[in-house]
Length: 172
Image 1: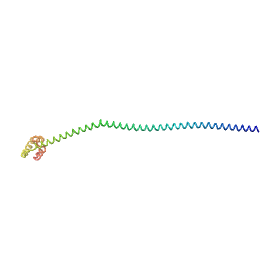
Image 2: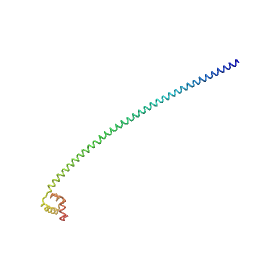
Image 3: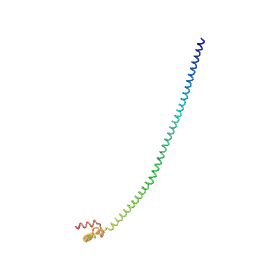
Image 4: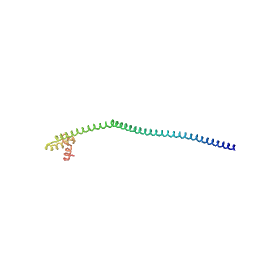
């Protein structure tokens, strides 16, 4: 029985050693797996941090882009205003000057017309006795070959009056 026991004891020691070896192997595998998981966790944390930094950079770049666009809009607006001032405003000023010149010309022409009307009313005042002699002069001058315009000029009367006298005299 001594041999059986030592065999049993050896089997038990072998089994214990085997269990210890299995336990050690499992422990080592567990340690390796823990290290791998720890590395994966660190990688995931690093990626999350990089992702967070990239999001911040994207937000900052978006703000900078919006600010840049606003600045460019302001610059373009200023340039357009400047171009308008340099090109359109002189044209408007020239048009105002032309309008002023035209108004002066119009005023001058109105004054001339008024003066001509005054002179015409002064000149056209003909005493009643001259009308009959004008008729005779008109007929005589037309008979000698003068034109209606020349007769009107000579007698200082209107062409319409010369034409009327000639029609009434059945010369025309």
